[in-house]
Image (cartoon, rainbow, N blue to C red; front, side, top):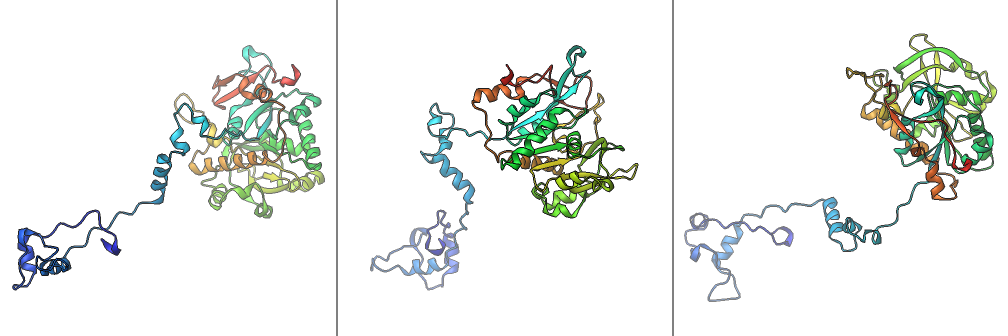
Length: 401
């Protein structure tokens, strides 16, 4: 072999006739078709035939190099102490560490609902499942908060949660949103990190909670619009999780996945008119209504608090796939891999934010009884706008019972 390493596959010696042609005429032939390693007269010296033939040996084929990955995997599988070897065994728990659940438990205030969501047309509340999936995709768990919850109830719930998420939909702002916003302000002012996220309607709620009225008359239903970044975007915590390719995609009119479905919002020209709003939040990006040509705020965050909001719907790219009976899409949502990368990056960002405080339920059982999966989920119904929704007469906290 090369470099002093013996080859596993020694080269086949040439045929006797080939060796005869290769050696000078006076050289002796090797008996039996194979070179004799030692001469019979001098056992300590190689024979002349071997010496001549050894110079003409073909080099062995190069040895195949193995990559570290497969070698490491094989080593783990073969190692007696490897956890990989323990899967499927009755005593696997002796070899594997106990699972550690993430701390991110996020509260979602519900929206009022009516037909076709409520059973038999009765008043009820609902939460669109795509927002739940948006959070759960990164390991968070979701607790519903009733649209009609009183202040004491909201404070009791949020003191056990790690963040709150204002969803999109169709509803007016309710006291529950004000209670949650005030709780988060007071908590952060006291050094207790507590994040808020708002999407579409939730984005609009945060504007109202910061003391500004909404502008109306946008014609931006069912369309993806490019983002126009402000100078503040360069130092944004939220946008920092998106790589350059995703930021360029969101700004590209031909590729953007920023799906809009709203008629309210706030004009960029009006933002600076409201001192509390301008002091609490900074604009990161805008978009332009292609019908009215009005530039509206599309993304903002607070430089002081962990509060973030988008006027568009990042959850829909991955989790809303409604279609008409003929198979055509119900909404013009972009479902490219890049669009879903944006969904996952933003959801991971907020879930990470929600893991920065130590709020927790007093018991696992109480937490389990509070989760949204205790409520029925409905698929499609008579509309394709939402793939799934959670419905309840009233989302209640176990502390009330």
